[in-house]
Image 1 (cartoon, helix red, strand yellow):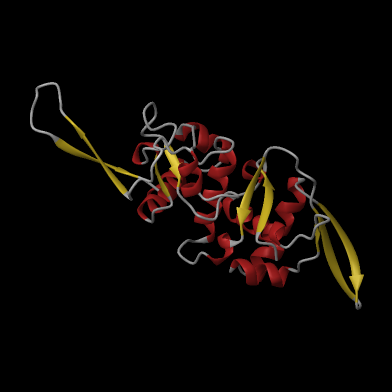
Image 2 (spheres, one colour):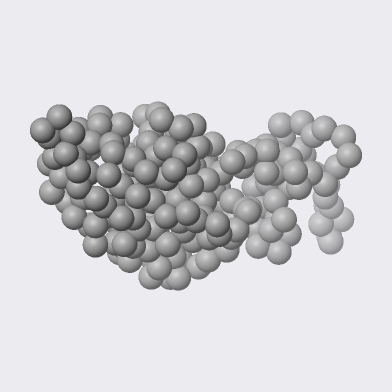
Length: 227
C-alpha cells in the first residue's frame, strides 16, 4: 500500500460518505500504473467495513459512478476484479494513508472530511462554501451535515479560519471553516499555515494579541492559535 494517493474531487459528489472512504482505501492500493486487484476481503480489512457492505453496496455504486473501469479476470481458477483508475492531472486531492489508521473517527466521519476537502478551495484547507452549498453538493441532509460538523469540531478535525493568525482568511472570513486533519494533503494543515507565516521569527504555540477598545478600557487578551 502507498503512503499517499490521489482522488478526483468529483468523487465527493458521486459517492456517499462511507463509499468515498472505501474508494480512497482502494486508491491507496493502486500500483504505479493506476491499477489494483484488491479483493473485497482486503478492502473490508483495510476499512473496517463489513464484507457484505463492500460486496453488495460499495461495489455496485462504484461501478455506476464511472470513477474507474472494472475488468474481470481469472487467477488460480478464482474470478477476480481489476480496477483501472484514470490519470487525474487536475481537480484532485492528495490523501495520506493515515486515513485508514485513524481510529478516532467513524468511516462516515472520515468520508465527510474527505468530501469537504474535495469541494473546498484548491491548495488550501479552507472550505470557502456556505453550509447550504456544501449540503447541496454532497447530497446529504442538513441533519447529517451538522451532526458530523459538530462531532469533528469537538474532536479537533475542523476549526475556524479565525482561530489561526496565519490563515489568509483570518481577517476577512474568521468564521469560515478550516480543516485541521493531519492526513489530508501532501503537506499537513500545520505546514500549510507555516507557509503563510506573517512573521520572520518563529511564533509560539499561542499568541496573545493585546488590544484596547475605543472606550479606552484596560487591555484585554485575545487568544489566537498558531499551528
